[in-house]
Length: 107
Image (cartoon, rainbow, N blue to C red; front, side, top):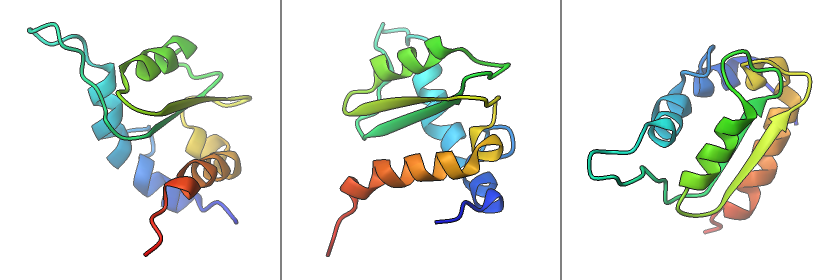
């Protein structure tokens, strides 16, 4: 399967601020609420980050994994900056495909 950078950019955004970045990512990285509850995601989550991300750290992957209420896996992409879907599109697409394959519902 060939990775299409335009499709990836539409889903993830040019700076990681696409559909997924605005929803799950921001929810999981926000601080504790006034009640002390941690925000959680009750769906399977795959967090992918570039090893050389100039805006984030590997610690963020651990924070996300710790806040997910269900299954979570993390991937640190080697030789990659802030936008793995643009810097390593084939790798990211193969990881996403592998992750969602078992989750597919066959009618």
